[in-house]
Length: 120
Image (tube, rainbow, N blue to C red):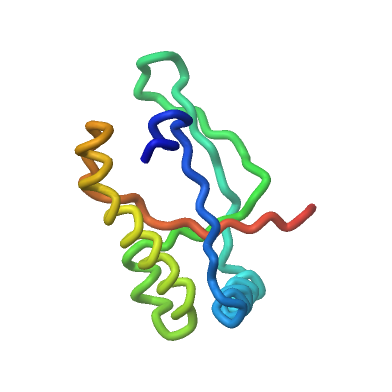
């Protein structure tokens, strides 16, 4: 939390064992081969304070790990869903500490995102 307070950024190495990492890679490759990834967009307000958003392309392709997506892929993406849950538990597990030390209130989270840079 001290690093978050000083820098505002926290980088976490997954530290997953090699079998888990391999299973994640296989699942992601299967999703790529099945055409499940979509072009990613980034949005920014048209002007300061505006509710209108301008979208621009990003270099990656993504899958949003929404509840519906996880329900539809619970059999073929078990490891990706498990990693998403681990990240959720970690982030929400910090909520009390973030509230006490930084005054930040964490109520929920956005869906996880799997991103792939194809190199093209």
